Image 1: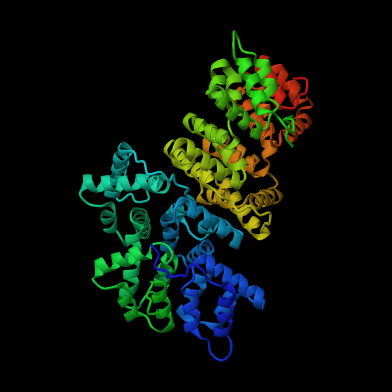
Image 2 (image 1 turned 120 degrees about the vertical axis):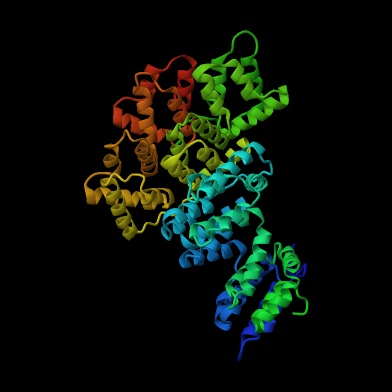
Length: 313
Length: 313
């Protein structure tokens, strides 16, 4: 479930006018901006951008970039992009920074059709294919794994083949035992099988070998390739649990990781942030809103809390 | 240009009735069948199949399989499938037979959107992804190359980057010179760059090194991996020339390769078979129809000639 609170009907022209007002004159009325865009869904935000362009012959997102700064600017910029375009931007930034975790998230949490839409959006924006840019910014085993993950168009059915799960759990177990992490078979299984089949294989692995594959792998967590593998497995196995962990790690770091916080909240607010919030509460015995309020401040805090469905903001 | 001669309007019910008649009683009127389906485009054939199913509660394609045999049966079966479904069937047969050439053709001649449509059709029919089946029926370097080729969603723009073409032509040349064919960089370049960019790179290669990359590679044509590489390069560089060569080889073999003939004629009759025919004539100084008529016979010959636009049939 989404956490975003948006009205059924919004008036894009009135919104554009109010946003213009908030951006004009001395200073910027960040509160007004947040109170509008923090309560509009993707379709509504798109209409606001169009209305703003027509009324003032100006790009609203560029105006926001001028008016805002720091973490709030980044969060608003991402929030205002169309969802698939946003993922394309996130992928491009991640490729340039060598942030493999985000590339894995984008390719393994998305449904097969969403990943395809991301690849299309990426091409429209960057005139390159996603896999092309991933491939030309990486090398070796990590390249091999990442290119296949972003190129995957997995079968989406729920049916699983228990015999196959059995065989491939064994293949994985042998490779992990031998520390042959970059084994062709691990890569093949992880990048081509359907998610439902992989989940069956991971369960089989744990049932037979007593420990989960992620736990076994995490023993070697300093190996960069292994950490990419573990991220991929977690994203495929239980994306919400994975995202809860990202949020928790971002908050608990000695220096809060605002990029990660923004990423999860902005991308999931219209999807499943409610469940991620619930998981957070169950695992940490404190509401995500409270934890966030402690670690962030000012209009950035207000914006995140608004997207989290906090009516007070 | 297509070679298929089809009327602007056809009556699917009348066609279904005529086909029923051709299939009933002693013997099968192959001539009647060919004269109908050999003059209907994909949309018209689809309507005939639907009308036939409704009228006689029977699958027309299955009926054809009972009535026909040998090369004609195979050709008609492929012809009657919806184009993307046909490619999915061809891919599946090729995977099972280990016929890498066909897998490369399907992935490298198709446009990026066509390849995507093929992947969708494959999943709908086989409940597996195409790359999954390719990966589980192959190993080693060939697997690596084929999986990436079938997973590619290349950028489709015409723009090329001359500097990149220069660098990557050098990378290719070094790898070829060192006989490092399975080099990561060759695979990366060939599987991720846009076709336009690759063509620029191949031209650059020839301009600087005096010989084309395919000629250089062909020196090692007994290496199976190299022959897959060469096929991929040819399909990307000039698909029509490549297909003309497939047809020529199929005809000139000591035992005519009907599968290859059927494949090219059935899949290209509604696309660009006219140009392939012209190329054939230019290169062999004999019309494709004449060459075909010498090597094939009976209703199979008649069917191929009909698809080639031979009005006499």
